[in-house]
Amino acid sequence: MMIASKRMIIYVLLLCYLAISIMDRMNMSVAGSSIAAEWHLTPTGLGYLFSSFFWIYIICLLPAGALTDRLGSRRTAAWAMGLWSVFQMCTGLALGLTSMIFTRLGLGVFETAQNPVANLVIRQWAPRSERAFATSVWSIGNPAGSAFGALFVAWLVSTVGWRVSFIATGLIGLAWMLTWLLLFRLPEHAGWVGERERAKIVAERDLDLESAAETAPGMGFRGLLATRTMWGMAITQGCSTYVTYFLLTWLPGYMQMSRGLSIMGSGVYTALPFAGAMIFSLLLSHLCDRMLDQSKVPGGQRRYAVAIGSLATAVVLLVPFASSLGMAVVLLTISITFTTSTQTWNFALVNDLLEGGADVGRATACLTVGGNAFGLLAPIITGYVVSATGSFTIPFVLCGMLAVAGAVCVLSVVRNAIGK
Image (cartoon, rainbow, N blue to C red; front, top):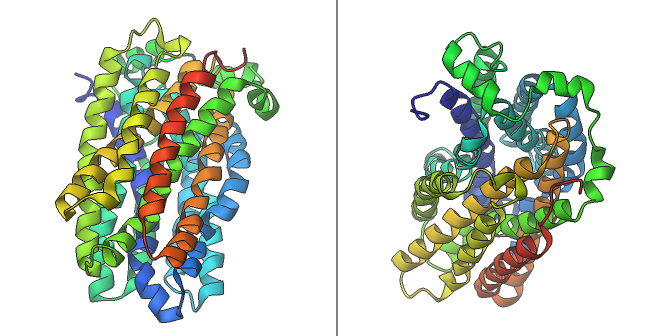
């Protein structure tokens, strides 16, 4: 069975890579009220602090994609996580707003390798028939990190203060880096993988990436950005990522300000929908792989799953109108499940439509830039709207409208293989 296969170790390592990074964003989100009180920040100021991470993150994404293609996944991930962990611990030592923004910018630089590395590793390790499942295992690091982070950080902030939570997350990152260096190799060279499984991986993935990197120069960024398909997937990713970043940065604040919960209470009720999404999004992606006609996957059949996921995400606009906290949690669980799945399937769609392996890092970086170009606006826009209206209704409705726009975009623009 695939779940019993040793390549699941690699998929879980990718899950943990993403989860650790997301824990940082939940650190800032849960601890935001404590930081704002200590440094006398308004909701607008807090919104800029939430978004500061993304200012340099979006600039460095394309170079990170190219660097991943050049250095390979093992070295890139190790260096990126190690330096990310240092800046994460330094965030807990920040003396004021200026020094904290500096550490957030450092985190933004070294987190950029995450998506290119993950998608390259999936192309290296996952047979085509389980690509969406492998991508989903990685992607549930988002709700997993959010769920665990919300509880863990809320407990730390409530007991020992917000600074310790950043230091603890940095130490977890260093532990992951050591584990990665110990375990990760290409399947051709991983001695802990059996010969039968190794043969299956090499035979059923798209190509031998080691030889492809030497013989195929790839399209490069200019070629990728000349295609309608790449733009369509990037815009769709942006619509979905806006929803994700809004919830990652402001959901605990919404629970505290609009639902009257304590820091610990907001952590619990933020963790619940993310924990549910962690389970349901994995099941959805497994179902998606089973339902797709594998002969039509290279032609972009997965875009229909992306569109359906985007439409289902739009239920987020109903959250502020929920009559009870329980109903709000149900709606949030549905929305987070489908926005997580949508981004998972969209990343898998890139690999489906990308004909060569030499541009995996670059194509993934382009998709991530599209996502974050929208996503980085979510904390700032929300901060302004909440300051002006004292309500979260407009931000939730805007998220729902963007989710619908993402579905329209992927159906109308994403039609051909990348490069055609």
